[in-house]
Length: 170
Image 1: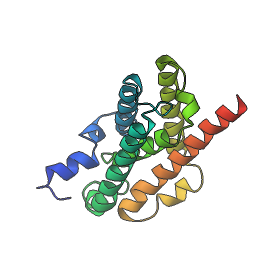
Image 2: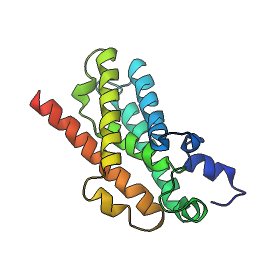
Image 3: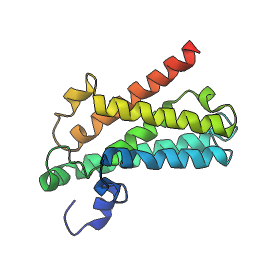
Image 4: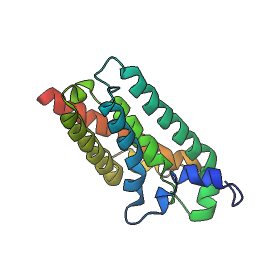
């Protein structure tokens, strides 16, 4: 990323959400949740016959925003410092991965309960991303884009695992 490449900066900051304050990571986590809600309301949720549309969209978001972190990480850190707060593509990728890994049964009920499940997944992901349980806290020390990204992907797996645990207990 250089100053002449506004497209790359736009993607790393998830459309500029990384510049929103407070809690830029929270802002960067919202787009996948909103898109998942739209898909669910449109009948393409993970517990429908069109589950594959939902899965492909969440997978595409995860891959695309992960790639932007990896490719643009060095330049972003050179510009803004280690694990820079304007870079929220990692949160966008992590939230999409969480939504991809959620138990489909959470979204099997009417849209209202599916939306409550999305809100719960959002809270779980943000909690894991902020708390950074092991090894998330260590992964952040990896240099460049991988260090920006990996802690969020592991936080996503933790958040989804907690959602599965809740479903199993219920």
